[in-house]
Length: 42
Length: 155
Image (cartoon, rainbow over the protein chains, first blue to last red):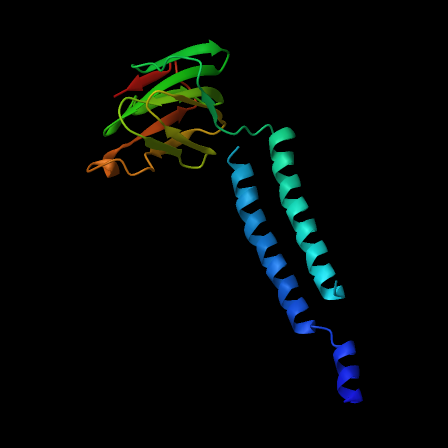
C-alpha cells in the first residue's frame, strides 16, 4: 500500500508531455509554413 | 494544479501569443491589409478601371452569374490596385492565385482590398463560392506586363 502511494507521487506523464511538445512543434511548422507562404504573396 | 498541467497551459499560451504576434507583425510591419466592407456607398452596377496616381489604379469590379466584369485586366508591373467588388445578383467569391486576395462579392455591399503586383505574369482569379450551374466557368485574370502604354480591361 505504502509502495503504491510513493509510485503515485513520483509519477510524471513523460510520454504525454513529449507527445504534447511534438504536437505544438507540428502546429508551429504548419502555421508558419502557411504564414511565410502568404507573406511572400505580398 | 499538477506540474505537467501547468506546463501544458504555459506552452499553449506561449504558442497562442506567438501566433497572434505573427499576425500583428504582418499587419503592422508588412502592411498587409484585411478585406474591408464598405457600407456607406451605393454599390456600382458597371465595372470601371481608372488611374488614381503613379502606378496606382482603382478597379471597380462586378460579379454576376456567371462572370466577372471585367474578366481580363491588363496592368503594368508594379501596379497597386484598389479593388472594389460587388455583386449584381447573389453571393460570389473572389480569389486571386499567388496573392492574398480572398473576397466575397455580396449584392448591396462593396468589399475592398488593396493589392500590388510586383512581378509580371498572369494571375488567374475565380469565384470560390458555389453560385450555380456554371460556377466553374466564373473566372478571369490579371495580366501584368513589363511595358504597357495604357491599362485595359476586357469582358
